Image (spheres, helix red, strand yellow):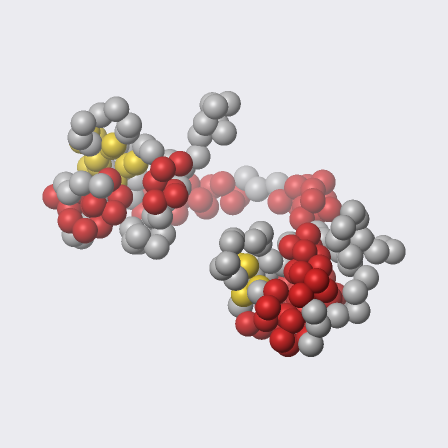
Length: 193
């Protein structure tokens, strides 16, 4: 995205190291911090102290690659009342019904393909629904866990996990770590009826 000129803005109300990971910091090098409560929060965002001394009301520190230290800025401040007024105006201008009609099919949950899988992925395994229930119930996806819970071999458990990934139920493999579950129990019903 950076090479094509696309911009991405991420925001958080809680600047902690589990949210602002080193991977995010490396890929999003320019950072803007408003007033924070502690020097630790400032270091989490900017890798330096200073944001804890800001006065609020749009007072900010901006850090970008190539600058030796963050630059202090005054950005436009919009009160909560102004945000609420603007949101109300935009809601009044909404064309939600026309949007829903035009794009409803874009937001339907994925369905199982008819008559088996695509390529190497097999969607016809009778244990697929049970495997999906197990990973959603436990909150993580693991081939070895499926082996134990379903009493199947490694190859079959691996194929089940591949099918769950292709369906969007679990995320991609992360080395030896378990896979992230991407849906809730309620959403699981949309996949299997």
